[in-house]
Amino acid sequence: MSFDLVFFGGTGDLTWRKLMPALFQAFRHGKLPEGGRVLAVARDEQDDDQYRAWLKDRFQDVIDAKRPSDEEFARFADLLHYRRLDLSKPEHYQRLKDWLAERDADTVVLYLATSPYLFPQICEQLGRAGLNGPKIRVVLEKPLGHDLASAQEINRVVRSVFKEEQAFRIDHYLGKPSVQNLMALRFGNVLFEPLWRRESIANVQITIAEDIGVGTRGDFYDKTGALRDMIQNHALQLLTMVAMEPPSRNDADAIRDEKLKVLRSLKPFTEHSVARDVVRGQYRAGTSNGKAVLGYREEDKVPGDSQRETFVALRTEVQNWRWAGVPFYLRTGKRLAARDAQIVVNFRATPHNIFPGVNAPNKFVIKLQPEDGLELHLLAAKGAAQHEPLSPVSLDLDFDKAFAENRVGAYERLLLEVIAGRLNLFVRSDEQEQAWRWVEPVLDAWDKDSAGPRIYAAGTWGPAAASALVARDGYAWSEEE
Ligand code: BG6
Image 1: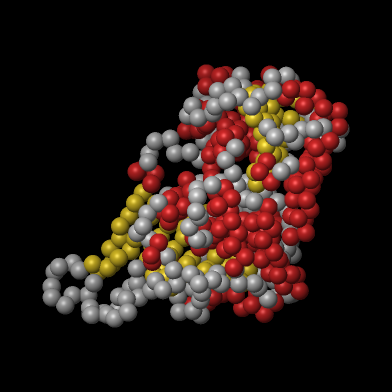
Image 2: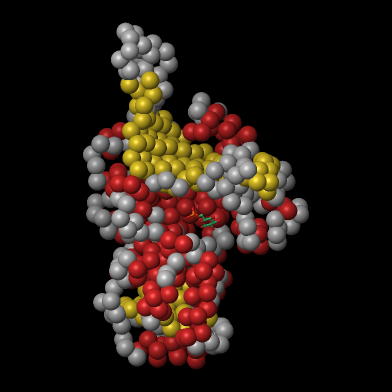
């Protein structure tokens, strides 16, 4: 199957930091279909060789194991081409069309790795140039909008040019092997499904903690914040995968229909419940991994009086028969104590205890990163004495060890899926809009609330109020138990 892959924003950060290295990995692993051409387009004037040399230089920043040797790069570079394209000029799109028509590949992927503010303009121009035929797929990178209205506007323009099945909206968490494994775990095994409901589960905790700060992205981040950057997309996608009903088929719409139902079942926020159930925080100076680090307001390109949240913890419920009354806690933040993304499913206590002491309920931990694995926490008898208290034990599974060979990174997986035309790992417009609809009352309530975020020291687990949020229901975050 021949394909042409076009990167708009071909000299931008996303292209050289994430997309090209991922594409190179796919090439190295022999997973890229034969007969591909890759075209980077951007404003600068340069030819193919200059672009290849520039990219080779950029690849020096890629971690050792993923960096190509000279010989590998030379082979990879044969796929790469470059054309100047001014996004506002119709004749430049016409030139792109001519280039694509030269060989009429089976599939054409147009990857918009630009600022989302440019999506409407690019899509309109693509439509006018007739670059929206059935062989064409368009890939849209997050952040898709700033709120519901802007997301709807982007979708309106995209839909006026492309069919829904031509639009691949990226949430890179869906490309992570650990996240795909959630589907396998739930719907490829009978073991968990009977217990996966309110009768057996006390609460679910989804944490995406980062130890890094905002780095060089202060400008972007201060307009965005943790709710838009992580909760509206990554954390909610994880929640839908934990809470969804079994889809009838492993196909994109069957899966996305079920995810949408979960998003529609989330308990809506009111001004009152935002004050009670959502905690926002902002890091001050502290220590991260043994090093003194700046506070958020001292970061580059962040205003000294910024009220932007770098941390969010919230409590919600999925209002349906399976999950009624079960708290779902979501938490994310920058400059937290560790880089750690995991889903903790806390089971209910045994109904009647016949052993001495208090028995900790079972806990199932789905570790997403840095490790990718599962832990099932159980109780067992040591067998040392009669009437002994039970001891905690855990069954641990490390997927990086179990499946050591060629595990595919998130962007590599997503690029391959787009080229193959499989939409399962991409977000449909109605899902994305529903997620915005749900977070918007939180943004509105914060706008009206002059109290601002709660301050936490860098290198900790966020403001104390986040612990209180969970403690109110009689629970604790996993690391506090
Ligand atoms: C991005 C956010 O979507 O996800 C970043 O914009 C965040 O702020 C990143 O750092 C986290 O991704 P990962 O794969 O490193 O967990």
